[in-house]
Image (cartoon, rainbow, N blue to C red; front, side, top):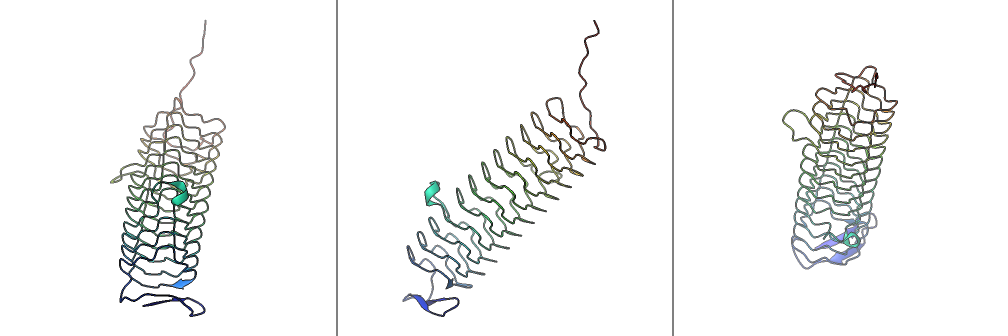
Length: 282
């Protein structure tokens, strides 16, 4: 079985087998390889260089991708269910910066510390995956399904999560500064609310986002645009909404006594019950 370069047609690897399922492909140089639609499930690819490779529609279920370089690779529509991209050691994580993972299935995967900066994850499914400390700066996650995933301490600065499904996601300590979450679902009916305690969401856009019931303890929402967002029953204890845009934002059943709302636009917010300071009239 031959693996050829996507552009030149040069043979990069010749395997004496009818399939690559379970194949040992560790530490191979496969830059620009054309592996379209191949079955690479449970294969050993750790340490290999697959920069700019084409893996569209490929099957990589349970594949070992620890320390694998996949920068700029095309993994659109690929099935990566249960694949291992990390062993928890920061220097061993796979490099997927700039990858095309549109509509890919990346469920139940170990993605701790993985570099996904500027990756295209539009409409990808990342449910039940572990993304502790993953890097997703400027990543495209529009309409991605990320239910029940772990994004603790994840770097999501300027990431686009428009319309993303984030029910039961743990994003404690995540950096979402400048991120776009317009229309994202983080709470609401038939949804286990997301947990975003201590996360940085300064300057984030949450227009029409569903955050009802979400846990937002001590979250920094300075200058965030939360217009038309649903925050009913959310826990905002210790949160900072300084200069936030809260036009048409619903605060039904939200305790605001410990929330900092200095200079926030609350003139058209719904169900806001601001606490009043008791004056000493003696």
